[in-house]
Length: 244
Length: 244
DNA sequence: AAACAATCAATTGTCTGACAATTAATTGTT
DNA sequence: AACAATTAATTGTCAGACAATTGATTGTTT
Image (cartoon, rainbow over all chains, first blue to last red; front, top):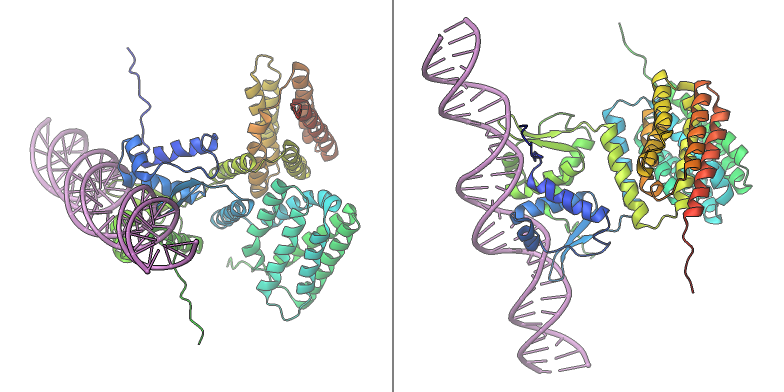
């Protein structure tokens, strides 16, 4: 007779407990802002020590699923995940992926501009007056000749994040602006001469004008030019290999 | 004289330690696969107890930044983050965001098809024979009349994930196929009649043919039809409100 | 010498019990 | 009624112990 292999648990207790609670949250058995039982009670229920429960809770806290508050009315509460927090996570994960997996600069540029382009038609339709104002504010900053390269780059990233969010679709804005911001460290490696900055700011202004006129085709055209310009800068930056 | 407010530490020790180690990893001071000091040594260095160090390590492990191995040559090692793991995280975060923030079905559909569309031109250029084979395999499954609604839906999701990754850009494929997969629970709420399934499979086949012919325009056209079809199903599914 | 078994040592996983810190609620005092 | 002190519940941290795992070492047998 064949042996019935029990589903052996290689995972430690704290991992199992974390997974159990995570499942409860994801499946909606624990509502947002609901309070979990106290650590001592969880320990009793799961039949483990408090230290083990705490390690499980720390895991969940690291994923922003819960937060712990001290005091008499304290405890662990289910977090409402916000777009901003989630985007921060996405950005830092993307940056790690790029850093650890030797993503070529060209691939990153391609991904970023491809995704941004997909937002343009929607942004042209739905951009608000606030969006336009935010875009113009960034363009204004970019014309400042005393701006450091890093600040210029940060402004550039903000500009394109606003474009992504101007699509009016939070899900789309979250992912695309995340992709744009994830690229910031790579963009910081580029060197902008004064003429480059002027050209880029000009393109940004033209793009803003096109969005104001709800002219998606022109906006797309300007974005293509920006992509080409960025690729050119990336090529220039490339150090010649010393394969002697 | 103005009081010099010390940077008060509301964060607990374990959080601070986790952040310190995370920074070391992100900044590259700890290389991939490098071994961290043992828990006891970390506890000594930071001047805290082993339990506190362990909670910090659990946080990092929850973010896939490190893993812990037992045994003589064990310890905590810096993880190489893989695209698949990162995508799993992205998908589960997206699903939580959608669930907790009452994203309308239409917004989710719009985001998903918008992002997928941005991959199409690249996919038409770069699709491999393997990609085409994978696409055709899914279409074949979708023609099976005995398939459950859930399995049909899962195949549909896999089909579009392959399209996203056929763009040949890992960064783009990661984000777009993540977006597609994040939608699966929502798509599972749709009801497919037999005729719907046939129409969808037909569109999938036509899209595959277009990609094979490197015809991005036709592929885009078919994707637009799929989007329209999905929107129609979503509309039908909507239960009439009983606002009596 | 090679193969195998037993032991050892390092490390993480878990438990127990204790105390500190924080904070809401309660109680007491004016 | 307003304010102060106490209390109770809860998380945060600590110290020390033992179990479980696993690579390395050592010893034994063939």
